Amino acid sequence: MAYPGETLTVNVWKDGRRLVASVVAPTRDNAVVLSGVELVPA
Image (cartoon, rainbow, N blue to C red; front, side, top):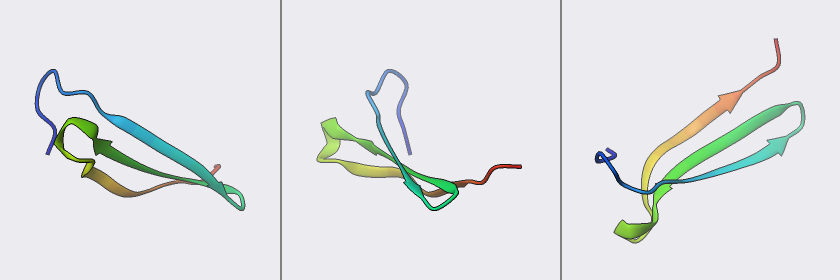
């Protein structure tokens, strides 16, 4: 869960042909907001 006005950090890395991402909230000890995101080229 993310709160309005909260700063988020997005981490993205390449794994083969896909991009994998996670989002954390640094002000809450890097609480995970979103994980398991995969972007695959069409």
